[in-house]
Every structure is written in structure tokens, then in C-alpha cells.
Image 1 (spheres, helix red, strand yellow):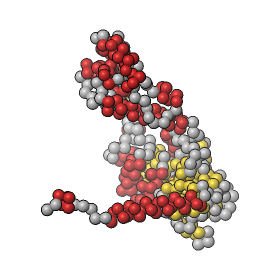
Image 2: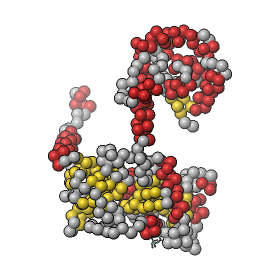
Image 3: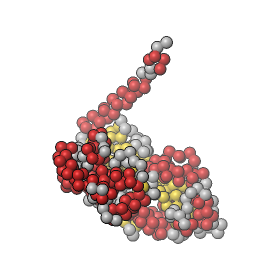
Image 4: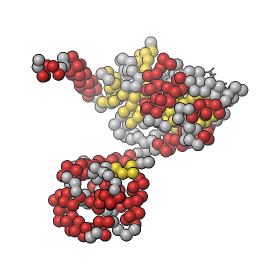
Length: 427
Ligand code: GTP
Ligand code: MG
């Protein structure tokens, strides 16, 4: 059951906060302040009361004096939101916060209310601004137990969905690739299933919008299946379960579904909400359905990013090529990455000398949800590290210097002996 803030409901119902609190008092609902939350059930009750013919406050005649007092005092006491918000948003935000005299609220509570309302208005403004941004492709991470068929599934999708492009320049294996599906672009990230690679799976889950848990139908739940599920849950990413290898005679997809229920993942045909898709990476059976579910899930997530905004990305993997030098795979998350840009990762910086897409084609710029391989770092960055951009070399150096200084300060602070309680209290 979801909860809602008292003042939000008051605003929605068009009554003032004092009235709202008096209705709650009548109902015997306890609360701390108007910023406390109440159950949705209670809201229904309140709606009923109001529909019945006005609030209790109005019935008892208190309403008139409340209004009069409000008129007198609202100009001096109504707190104004402090946060920067769009003018129209401010206009929509209620200027009706009840004055302290009759709301039973202290000045502190009023200030808290004003801050909360300003925060809400700012949030609304941000949501409204975000809704204007273009959609971006979902980033889908494939996880599961060793040998359950993650890479095979991606190979199938890749060979059938990635139009062969002319590879120019540095063609390398990239753990992330883009695929065109009938419902648009999808970015996939493969992860290893071996137990040694826990951190890679955790990072994979963290950059994902959607996690696909691959479970072999002849093997069912295994230790790294459970681990992968835990990573996806910890990262708060929606999950789809691909029950793979259904072409095998010993495949038992029903057993996989039953096993899932034992870890509180109840498949749809068991009355739950976990989507399971039977697939075969060998025959391609079910792969189209899986892609369909990915698109549907992505639609619900309403993924957007600003290609014109400030660049932000994350390192997927990096390695040193004897001839080319450091090759780093970067996932562009916000903004657009261009050849010639300066990038800062941790305490290193580099200039993008060359960039290729996941098909190995040289490109000059890359927008949100694009995995690219770049040449230009002098040291290999670690996967999972965040990538920022700087407008020139000077700015990049400054940023690195700042980070170094901050790290040294933190190290110093850690070195200093801490005072014990005995030091403070004396013998
Ligand atoms: P790791 O990356 O080591 O965790 O393994 P993985 O999950 O990527 O498995 P991979 O794709 O390497 O496949 C493991 C084995 O299963 C290979 O021999 C595949 O040929 C086989 N395999 C994968 N998918 C299928 C399938 O749908 N049907 C059958 N019959 N075999 C499959
Ligand atoms: Mg693999």
C-alpha cells in the first residue's frame, strides 16, 4: 500500500492544511505534521467525507474564521519556495500554506513545509524538462551462471540483428554492442558467468537499464544465477528471465519456473510478475519474443537523455593493444562524445584520438546509449570508472590536479591519530 504526504492530498483536494489535519483528528489518524504520510485507504476515507458535504471544519463554522485569518496573515506568513523553479511552476505551487495561527504548525514546521513544496515544484520542473528530452536506447546486461549460453544468445542476436558494417581502423572485441530490432536500437553488454567475476557482474548490473538473467533449461538455478539476480535487485534494475537451451531434449523450462518461485521470483504463469521467455541460442526460437519484451520494458522505463547536454559516461572495459595502445570501451550515458574531446577518468586524462562503434566502424561522435571504443588514454582505466569531459587540455589537467589534491587530503585525514574518549575525558 503506497503512502502519500498529507499536504499533497490537501492540495489535491483543494482544502487547506488546517482543515486536513482536523479531518485526520476526527478520524483518529495520528500524524506528526502536514509533511507526514498517510495510507491511501485513509485518503479514500477523506475524499468520502468531503464528498458528503464539506469538511468537518466547515460544518463546525471554523471555516469562515480560518479564511478570514488566512487572508489577514497569509501575506506576511506564507513562506515562499527558495529553490529556483520555473515561474509557472511557482504559480502552480500553492500559495495557500496555512498560517501558523490556525494550522497548529510551528514556524519550523511551516519552513519545512515550504522547503518540501519547493522541492516538489523543482522535481516537477525537472520531470517536465526531462519529458522533453529524446528517448535513448536501453542498455541491457546479460548475466547468469557459467555456460548457460549468455554469449551464444548475444551471438545469435548480433549475427541476425547487426548489419555487417565495413570495419575500418581498430576492429576489436567489444563486450558491448548495439543491435537494431524491429522496435529500435538496443545496447547489449555481455558478462562472464564464472564465479571469479563477481565485480564485473556487479558493474554490469550497475550500468544496465534492464538485466537479462539467462538460465539453462537443463540446469536451472545455479549459484551465479542467484548472484546475478541479487546484483540486478541491488542495482534496482528490472529483470527478464531468458530460459535458454529449450532445444535440448532434457530441457525442463517448467522446473526453472518452479525453482524461481522458491527465491520469491514468481513467473507470470504462476500468478506473479516475473517475465520468463523460453529461448534457444542454437535455433533462435523465442529470441524475437525476448527482444519484444526488452522493448516493452524499456518503454515503461521511459529512458531519456540529452545529446546536447554535458557529456557523462562509464568505462565498460579497457586493454592495452601492442600496436594501438590503450583501447577503452566507453558507454556514453549523457551528452555527445566527439573525436578531439578531452576525457578525465579518475586521475588520468586523455584526448580522444580515434573512436569506433561496436561494429568496428570509425565514427566522429557518439550520443547517449552508444558503446564506443576509444584510443587516447595513456593508461588503461578500470572498468566501472566514470568518465567526464573537459573542454581543453588545461581544464583536464586542472580537474586531475583537483582530484589528486582531494585524495591527498583524504589520505592525510586518515593518517591523523584519532582522539580516543580517554584523551578527551582525561585520566
Ligand atoms: P560464460 O561466459 O563462460 O559464463 O558462458 P556463457 O553463458 O556465455 O555460455 P556460452 O554462450 O559460451 O555457451 C556455453 C555452451 O552452451 C556452448 O557450448 C554453447 O554452444 C552451448 N549453448 C548455448 N546456448 C545453447 C542453446 O540454446 N542450445 C544448446 N543446445 N546449446 C547451447
Ligand atoms: Mg560468455
